[in-house]
Length: 143
Image (tube, rainbow, N blue to C red; front, top):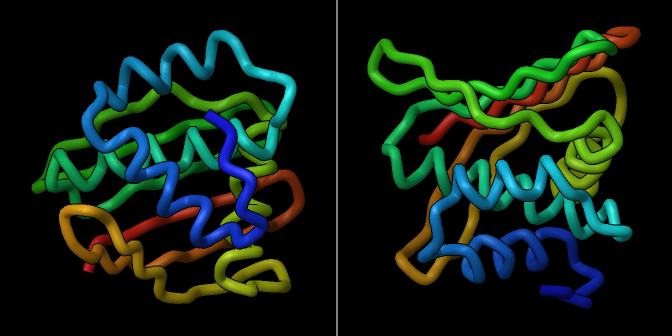
């Protein structure tokens, strides 16, 4: 599905809404195996699926960590952690750029609040980005 809206925040909300009634983990696994030609679209799709998985599992935190070689995606809920299929390096870079564009974050570190308006209601998240050399951390905490 191609969403042509130039507003990245609205595009993310629409993608979340589009995949609201699917198996998020299965869709992420498919996306990680076969990326399409539009990496920006794939980044929006991946982030939407990861956020929706986190929200529906009633988790507290979604975190992405990259050391330049490997990307790890974890979901934390009440003491437990679950790993999600990681995106490619190119898609992860686009995810970080997407979040920076939505929240207007510049510099190596930044923190802001993100509100997603979904069919089922609003979800508020605290977002933190930290980049130092090849290491990148992106964290979403449900409020």
